Amino acid sequence: MTSPPDPVPDTTVHSIVDAAATTLTWDYEQDQIAGLRTLYQKAKHAQWDADVDLPWATEVDLEKNAHLARLQWSGLEREVTGTPLERFSERDFIRLSIESDNWMLSQFLHGEQGALACAAKIVATVPWIDAKYFAASQAMDEARHVEAFARYLREKHQGLYPINVHLRALLDDIISDRRWDVTYLGMQVMVEGMALAAFGFLHTATPDPLLRELLRNVMADEARHVAFGVLSLREHYRELTLSEITERQEFAYECVIRIRDRLLQQEVWERMGLDLRDVLPFVVRDPVRQRFQYVLFSKIVPNCKKLGLLDAGDGWLRRRFTEMGVIAFEDAVEPSSG
Image (tube, rainbow, N blue to C red; front, side, top):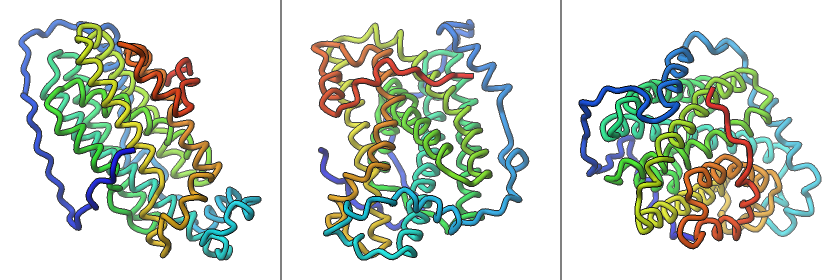
């Protein structure tokens, strides 16, 4: 496991030095990458307006939703024995549910801004005109997602959490890398794949009709973004050397570890007045967290296989995913790009 990154600084501005070269192309031929122009056409027709297409007049009762979320703790009394949660009252668990939702939505918001920056970088660095077209449409998507999540947290929740240290470190690495395909791999395949699974999990679980509609719209966009990454990288990776592919395998695995580590929600426990080290034994056994973490890989593992990253070389990434117990997802049905 990687060592924890430095704490998030107390500032609203975070700069990342990017050494990537801007690439212009004078080749305007279409379909240099099969299927990409079709995906771009879908993206143009699927644009929506966060201000007018979501039911913002919906009343959101955080405590009522948290009462329903409290069901996830039912029957777990024996699991919390010996942890600080053993002393939690019903009100404490309700607050924990509200804080957990706020934390998750806050990280969605910060991740979407990272995706916005990555889409802009892809426009500047990718060598194909159709990829520039689609990345420009994705930048519009991501701006809309940032707008929607920020408004939901501002108007319907209780403010927001700062960016998690693991997510910040992951975005730093993805955005600062000079290789355009690593930005693709980190954002389009790993982070967007994880986000698509996370949005689907929350869409099923939340009783809030406004949040369900917001997530439904965002998920349709994200499915196209993941497909964009796979289409763009599949042919390119066939041209790389074994050492270059090995670097991509290691980068993909590092992304997965950081995604996994951030799910410990240490900021939530701190806000509840608890030390993560005291509740960690319960957190790692929590079946809801385990199920959520497990489902994240249903989008990441199949796309790593499609890109040839699972079995390249001596199958290094396959062994890592096998050790993590998620290799069974390699043939899972991938998200639609419609």
